[in-house]
Structures are given as structure tokens and as C-alpha cells.
Image (cartoon, rainbow, N blue to C red):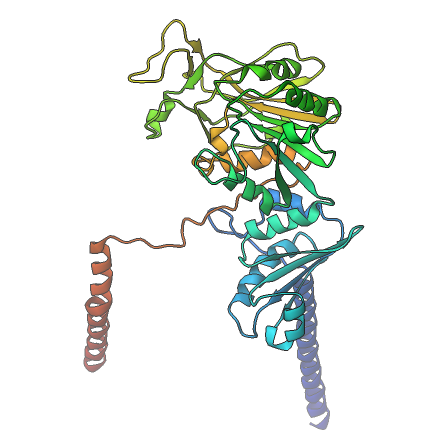
Amino acid sequence: MVTAVRSELRGLWRRRLGYAGTGLAIVVVAGTLLAIAIEHRRGVDWSSTRRHTLTAASREVLTAIAGPIEVTVYLPKQHGGRERAQELVSRYQRVRHDLRLRFVAPADAPDTMRTENLREGEMAIATTGAHGTRRELIEVYTEREFSNALARLARADEQWIVFVTGHGERSPAREANFDLSDWAKLLGSRGLKVQEINLAAQGVVPDNTRLLVLASPQLDLLPGEVAAIEAWLDRGGALLWLMEPAMPPSLTPLARLLGVAPLPATVVDPATARLGIDNAAVAIVTTYDDAPAVAGFAATVLLPYAVPLETTDTGGWQVDRLFASGADAWGETGTLTGSVARDAADRAGPLALAYALTRKSQRAIVIGDGDFLSNTWLGNGGNRDLGVRLVEWLTHNESLVAVDTPSAPDTVLSLERWQAMVIGLGFLFVLPLAFAANGVWLWWRRRTA
């Protein structure tokens, strides 16, 4: 009897030790998995537009920054903005493990807030490299703002975009519909410096210019001004030329030097009617050629009153067409008043609208339109993104392309009036009656059981 009891006790203890060992193993495995999960976070983006996943452009911007990235958010404790900041920065941390985030309560650092001129809610993004520590501040916690700040940090030096002025050009400073001030502000938000230059007074394009822009001059340039632009090209400078149907004759030698010339016509595109645009003189561009300057670009671009282009003697340039009009479009050689119809004198589409020119490391682009970047048209379709992309390519900053954050189509619930009434009546009457009926049925069932 005693032996049997002892054997049973030993068996009981063995089972208990086995249960304890199993429990301990489960705890160890769970703790290990938790530690791995904390160290290597993974997530799945189920949103229809993948808006919680970094765009390819943002990933490219991250790779352009060599050193570690420090993000500091100045918000009070328990502030709801901390969660939004954490969610945004965590997307970048999944790509860059040396990106660190910390929160600072303004009340805990009054001296820092005052000496560094900081405001509550600002997010400071800093990186340290060969040029020391640099910092950018943003107040809106979105991927576009964050990646644009990273793009500004990625530029090692000041890059000046210089606009020729004095001949009725589109101005980066004025805010008229014809001008380019909105586009200039967009370039400025990406760390590019925008400046106008009067070549008649200056006489030469400054050496610190990264890109010279000839934005639709209306009047003839002086011979010395044309010579200054040609000298800039001879020095290997980059040029963006926004042409118009009426090109001043003084620029003919410059067009000949580049090997690109405008045709005497204005593009008319019947596709405008299908898109609800009440102006046939708008070229609709939906496809792009296989050229580095527009690699991967797929947005629809609208070019009003565009002039078709043709290539002549390239003079040593490698010329690549960037995009053209649709096959249904044509080059109208007559007036654009009244009913416009194609006739035998017009040029059949597709018509080239932009060319990229390269020789060695030098780059230039000629586009047969300037309206698409104007304050009136910049926000239409992909005009803004194309304008930024071309400048980034011209300045050899292909990795710092515009960040087009996907919009969320499912964050707002729009209901018709009758739908809202059905939902309201359902919650007020139908559901309570259903619960009451269910209770009565259960009571009756138990009583009769």
C-alpha cells in the first residue's frame, strides 16, 4: 500500500513538473517572439490605396540621406498628435532602422523652445553629415511634408533655379494667373532656391546657377543676352525652355543650337470634349516615351495652347522625345476662334511636345508649352508633379522626385437623406423592438418548457 502511494505521488510530481516545464517553455517562447516583434516590426497595409505604406519616391529620398536621422516632436504629454506622429514616423522606421523618434514636452524645455524659436506642434527632422547637422521643421504630419523635408536635407549645397526676366516672361515672383509663383513655391519647399535674373544688367549667368529657366519670353532678347545663354550652355549649364507658339525671332539661333524648333501651329486635341474641358486647344498627355526624365511617370498632364516641336541638326546633343499629343490631335495652323476643324493645311498627330537633350553630364529640356506650369493650370492633373520631376532630373536629383501621397477614398461616409433616415429609424425603433421580441420569445419558451 505504501509503495503504491509513493509511486502515485512520484507520478503526480512528474506530471506537475512536466506541466511547469511546458508552461515555462511557453513563456520563454512567447517572450522571445515578443522581443523579436518589438525589434523587427512588420505590418500589412490592407487599405485600398496602400496609404499606410511609403511610396517609392519616399523610399528613394530615404536612401539619398547617408547619416542617421533624428526626429523630435514638440508636443505636450498625452497630446493626440503624438500618436499621429508615431504612426507617420513608424513607416519610415520600417525602411531606415537608424531613424530615431523622441517626444519633448514644450513645458519641460522652455529654454530650448525660446532659443531655437520653436513652436508647439512642430516636428524637427535633423541629420548629420559632411556639412554638419542640418534641420528642417514641419507642422503637418503627412508623408508629403515629411519626405519633402528629407529632400531638402538631402541637398548638400544650395541649388539656385534662375529665371530669365525682362522680356515679358512668366515670373516666379508675381502671382498673376499667367505667372509661375505657385510652382516656384513648390520648388522652394523642396529646398531649391529660386531667383530672377536680368541678363541685360547682369551680362552673364552666375556660376552658382544650377538650372536656367527661359519661361515663355514675349519680347526679343538682346544679342548680348542670347550670347550669355549660349555661353551658359557652352559651360555645361542646364536649361529648361518653355516655348510658346509665338517665339521671339531673336531666339532662333538658340533653338538652332539645341536642335529643337517650334512648328507654326497650335495643338488642338478632341480628347478635351470627352474629359469635359470646354477648350479644344488643350493637349492631353497620358503616355510617355521611354526616357530617363519621365521614367515611371504615368499621370495625365494638360498643356493649354501647346506648340508642336521638331528636331533639326542636334549639334552633338542626344535628343530623346519625352511625350507627344494623341494621334487624334492635330496642329492647327489657322485661327482658334469659332468652330475649329482640321483641314489639309494642319499637321496630323501625334505631335512631339517635349524633348530632353543630353551631352556628357549636361542636360536640357525644351517643352512646347508654359501654361501647364502657370498658377492657373498647375493644379490640374499631373502638371505639378511633372514640373517638379523635370527640374529634379535637370539638376541631377532624380531620387528626390515629388511625393504623390495616395488619397484615401474610404475615410468619409456620404449618405443620401433617405439612407440616413433608414439608419436612424433602425436604431431608434427596429433594433429595440427586435430585442424586445427576442426577450418575449425566450420568456415564452421557458414558461412552456
